[in-house]
Every structure is written in structure tokens, then in C-alpha cells.
Length: 511
Ligand code: NAD
Ligand code: MN
Image (cartoon, rainbow, N blue to C red):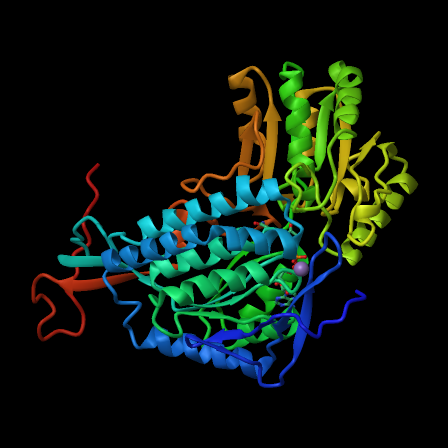
């Protein structure tokens, strides 16, 4: 992008409780996708910097102070950090709007408040009882058994650009709550809100050095080091299925624990008794929120033939009225997409859809508004006459492109909905609760919304079936992904005294 970077603020790496420049003194600008303006110069870590961060996290974990802190104390501390984040949430929102093209509404109505609620959720969960009860074991010998949850250790956490703050929260808060230490790597396009998050935490002075480290830099350099370094115990990744696969392969060399939140091509199923007003707006929200740059977006819309001719024109009419504009404008429904490259890729998919025989009932174009000429903008596209086997219906476009698929029977809709490599989420719209629930149960995906979309509850699990991922975030499930489980066995008699083998008497089953 055509901007001089001379006077931009410089953002350093955060290693062992200190801000420090990368060894090779390499920096890269981050930009505002609304207008192409340079925002800051971001330190680019190489392998050596990454190793320093890993070493710091290792030392902080192994010294045991953080890992063995009482759950109540850790919880109290995380609540104090939550207070600090709440007090400075405008700074986070500003970073999110400028660096990632997150609209004002998305920042203030969704990402920041939801992120803070999710952080609180884990601050509360940090006060968990590490002991789990097991029935007293009597075979092969009477014993007392302790089952204890313990932190996993050093966690490498790699996140994407679409929800930079929320994804950073989803990663660091359960890991901290469980007593782990962290190396967080934000996405190259959107480091600023994660840096802000770490700045705020640093300013509280509450975390011991090395517990939370932040390493900005290229995924292809920092990622493989995190995934193969023997000092790292776990990798948590959110991003594309393609990179997720690569991460699993790399992490295999040292058998790291891996959780993956990957891509999606989620079905959104309208049943013939749906509330039409609700379903039209809901379907647009399901697809076009953040320009379709959400992993769980409902990008395949299944509409029954019986209401198709009424539903689709209303959908197109309403979509044409969504306001596209600067992210900072409180009236914008849609802002820019993340990058010029992403914009080009979306346009290529639109071209492909036309070549595959789908009808561009609403064709996305670059807006002509002079104010929007320096940003990465494209208006929504709605394809009708889509066949579920087309590439536009099978591949994640990650842009404002909706595929409408007509169906005849509910069974057909479910079969097509499940005909995908992904299984992250789905929507079902109906006035009949029982019917909606029976469809929801038959969809192979981790989250199903009925008469709603995109809302994520702190207490409920989020994650993918099939190639959408491994593991779950949020709820108590999200905490357990950061805990090992240990069994300690203590005999209650001295039966084995003087013996190599026990005299084990196998209990006889009565008939
Ligand atoms: P991406 O996979 O290209 O990058 C994600 C992160 O991985 C970035 O930080 C990147 O720098 C890093 N990375 C790149 N190459 C790497 C490598 N070889 N080793 C390790 N790390 C590497 O994804 P993206 O374009 O930033 O984000 C969009 C994708 O994320 C979409 O596929 C979307 O569906 C997915 N996503 C999933 C969820 C979810 O919860 N399931 C949430 C948000 C986004
Ligand atoms: Mn940016």
C-alpha cells in the first residue's frame, strides 16, 4: 500500500514481562482496510525470538509459582485483569475497528462486550476444584485414588484475523485460568488488539513474567517453531483447515496436545413454516455479518421449493439495502474485507460461480462512493440456482457471498446440508419447535442455532465436527482442553508386602 511508514508507532514483542525489539530488527506495517492507512510498525519475530519467548514461558511454568497458585487466588487476579480490560475497552475497540475493518456496531455490540464476558467466564472458572471424585477402587486391591486436574504446561496459541480480539480472549483466558503459560501469535493483518490486550495486562502488573508472551511475526516462521519446539506442550490454533492440517503434522513430531478451530461452509435451513420476516433478516445476518468473514457463517442457504418464489426476492431486496461503509461509521452494516488479496479472491469466486452455472441474482461490485476508494470494499453477492456440488457451495469463500439452494423435502435438505467436509455450525428456521429440533439433531455440526445465528454463549461449547476442528472452546469444555488429568493411586493395605505378584482373586460373577 502506498504509504510512508516513517512516523508510525512501533510495537514490540512481549517476552518475559518486557517489551523488546526483535533480534533482527525487522518490522512490518499494519494497515487499516477501510482506507489503506498505515497504523503501526509491528515487530516481526524470527525463530530466535520465538525461542526466547518459548524459553520464558517454559521457565515461568516450571518454577511452579503460577501453575501451583491456589485456584481462588488465580481467579481473583483474573477478575482484576477483567476490570482493567473493561476500563480500557474503548482502546481495544479502536484497535479492532482500525486494524481489522471491524465495524463500529460489531466492535461495540458484539466483539468487545462478548470478549469481556468470555474473559469473566474463565476468571470465574479459574476457581475450579482440581480434584475429581472416583468411586473407591476395590479390585485388584483396596486403594484410595486421587484424580486431579493439572495445567498442561507451555501453550502456543495461533489466531486468525477475522475476530482478532475475541480469538485472543478465547485462547488466553482458559489457558491462564487453568494455570498454563502462553506464547500468543496474532494474525499478521491484525496484531493491534492483541497487542493492546497484552499492554493492558502488562500495565496491571498482575501476571508473573513469562506467563503471557506475545510474538508477532510471519505464521510460516513463528508457527513451525511453536509447533515443533519440544518445550511447547500444547498448540491451540484457530484458522484455515489447510494450515490446521499443517499444524497437526508439525505437532506430531513431539506429540503435542492440539486443539483446532478451523473453517466452515455452514448450512442454514429454512423450513416451510418459518417466520418469513425473521428468516429473511436472519439469513442475511447469518451470512453477511462481518462480510462473511466468520468461520461459522451460514453461507449455504437451503430454501424449500414451496416458498422459494416468495422468499428469494425478499432476501435479495433486503440484501441490496445493507449499508456498506467505513468501519468507524456507526451506520455501516458492512465494512471493508481484510485485504486487497482477500478482495481479489472473493471476486474470483464470484466469477467461478457464474462459470459453474449459478445465477448472480445480486452481483457484488466495488462501491463507487469516493470515500471508499482506498479501502477493500465489495457489496454482497447472492447466487441462486446453486447446486451443492459446485465449488462455490463446497469451498470457504470468506467473503459476502451467499449460495441459495432450492430443496423439495426435509430429508433432501438435511442430506445436502451434511454433504460437506465441514461441520462447524448450522441454522434452522421454523415456527414448530419440535420440527426444528429434530432437524437440528440430524445436522453433523458443533453448534446449531434455531431461529437465530452467530450468538455465542460463554457457558456453551463451540467447535467443529469433521474437518472443522478438534476440541471445544468456552463452557467448562474449553477449560478442560487446557488441563491434564492425573491419577494418584495409594494402596489401603499392605497386601503386596514381601511379594512380587499380588495374590489376586478375580471376583466371580454371580449368575
Ligand atoms: P490462516 O490459517 O491463514 O492463518 C491463521 C493463523 O495461522 C495466522 O496467525 C497465520 O499467521 C498463522 N499461520 C500461517 N501459516 C502458518 C503455518 N505454516 N504454521 C503455523 N501458523 C501459521 O487463517 P486466516 O486467513 O487468518 O483466517 C481465516 C480462517 O480462519 C478461515 O478458514 C476461518 O474459517 C478460520 N476461522 C475459524 C474459526 C473457528 O473458530 N473455527 C474462527 C475464526 C476463523
Ligand atoms: Mn490491519
